[in-house]
Amino acid sequence: MEHTIAAISTPNGVGGMGVIRISGENALLVAESIFNSVSGKKISEMKGYTASFGKIIDEGQIIDEAVALVFRSPHSYTGEDVVEISCHGGMYITKRVLRAVLSHGAKPAEGGEFTKRAFLNGKMGLTEAESVMELIAASGSQSARAALSAMEGSLRKRINGVRDELLNLAAHLAAWADYPEEEIPEIDESELRNGLLKCKSELKNLLSTYDAGKVMREGVDTVIAGRPNVGKSTLMNLLAGCERSIVTDIPGTTRDIIEETVMLGNVPLRLSDTAGLRNTNDIVESIGVKRAKERLLSAGLIFAVFDASSPLTEEDRQLIGLLENAPAVAIVNKTDLESKIDSDYIRSKVNHVVFISAKNDADTKQLENAVAEIAGTSKLDPSQGILANERQYSDAQKALHSIEEALTALDMGITFDAVTIIIEEAINCLLELTGERVTEAVVDQVFHRFCVGK
Ligand code: GDP
Image (cartoon, rainbow, N blue to C red; front, side):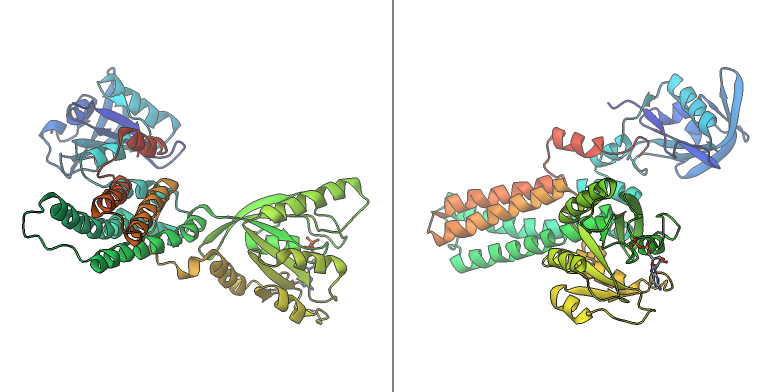
């Protein structure tokens, strides 16, 4: 039997309300021992989905007024009896209520333990449990939508579609191999191949959305590059919506790397505003320049800024040279001034070119579209179920490898027995992905990353 656990489920800090969650066989009794309802009704006599107003009392002292909300097994988040005590938020009160709960028999919950219990009690699959965390961490609407859709089972359904197809093929092959005396029709090799090809293409589709999904969830390291005075700091301030970098008319004032995370459309960008690439004799600046080049080469995305009001310089051309085949947007800035730039040359070298006036123009839509295209998020449909983390990605990839191996084995004329074994390996990877057949170590690893109280 699992012990009863408790934790503060609201963030640690001053707030209007705090929630202490208790789950387990003794949840109702534990809550009852510290809660006196105004109506006189005992918590252990309350029905599920009902609430009661009363006082939290511990060691003979009133700690706070609170509402106790009762959920009865199996109709709760964890599948166990659950009581949620809503008291006043704050550093002291919530901790004091938790202490009272723990001194009456509950144990402190580990990170993710409520959700782990929900998984172990069959309330949700592993991919749904993982998406709970993604939902909490979501920074934009599209990543929240993707997490919500995974929580509702869209990813599991997609994986199960492939799994069922493979199970079908494996069962047929096994039956035919194990009972040769029965009249089981030999599986048609082209049927087998087509089935495998279907699974292969579905898994490939799924895997191809991973990078875009990751960008949407975790953001992308973005470097703003360009020679001094083209408007990098102004652009950064426009995107960040505040005066963050020092903007001056003297070239070379943005010496070091300044970071800021901003949302551009659905993509969080970790922006760094770097020094220009100008070769310089100033020691401090030249260190900045060297770091800028290093950052540029390792960036997930480059915003290369050019000044529309002056012809391209040697330094601009050097920068353009670095952009070919890189994930880059060339931003031609200062379009409010008379144009002297050779924008056709930039267009011939860089795929994505946008024109703005960072100083006057608050419209970043063009830039937003270019970023969505480069990051692949413009093609992403969050309701389709996408892979949410390395664990899921690696399982899906292993399954794909096995399917490819099975196809090669077929081409080489290897016996159906051996092909069956390879198909079963693919099935196992998919069962691990959805958590249907998963080791304790994997489960622990998944929930280890959760915060306490969820
Ligand atoms: P950085 O050295 O590349 O960071 O350039 P800054 O952002 O410091 O900008 C250099 C100068 O160009 C400042 O005086 C800005 O006000 C000016 N500037 C930036 N963007 C624009 C723009 O779109 N139009 C005009 N006319 N001036 C701009």
